[in-house]
Image (cartoon, rainbow, N blue to C red; front, side, top):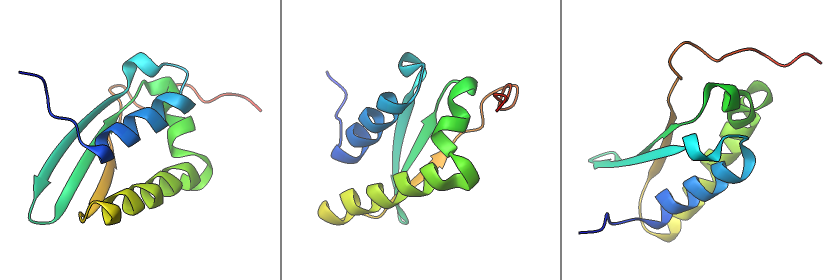
Length: 94
């Protein structure tokens, strides 16, 4: 039986795969409880800076978009970005 996919999960996966350098490493898991929907996001350690953004700007923008998707589907959607194993990896030099 195929895994049931939800609009919020599909949207997050599509969005993050579009901005990272290692799209094959993007993993989204979805859980539902009394607080609403929780999407857990795992990405390659080298992509953490891109996903979080400067001072968390990208992560906050993604969370805002997920809230809109959730409102449309009558659900409260939250995002948790998992810290990769071994830390964030090297920071690019400017």
